[in-house]
Length: 130
Image (cartoon, rainbow, N blue to C red; front, side):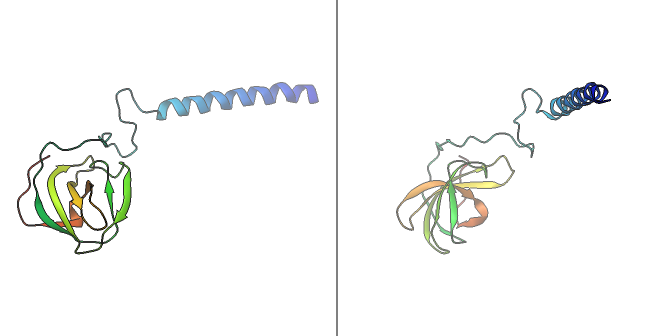
């Protein structure tokens, strides 16, 4: 009896392994895709804008992360600044998520430039596209 169960158990394991491999293959990202679950294109997180306006602005919120690129997926520098702090706004771009992202310099603790969503900043002069 025991000898009959072992081959049956091995056959079941082989079948489960083939089914699992089939599921993994069917859910893999197609060639040429970004591999991101949200369908957005992969961000360019090291981009430094060529346009360099110097528009005065302020932070609309405190503790805003300054990112290395115009996307949530880009690494952030430690959040800094408080609501109302002075910033210099340089230009804007549309991120992979469809939101407006602003390249700016935060003057709160020490000058550091980076990207944040436009909703976190206020400025009065029209901006150039980065």
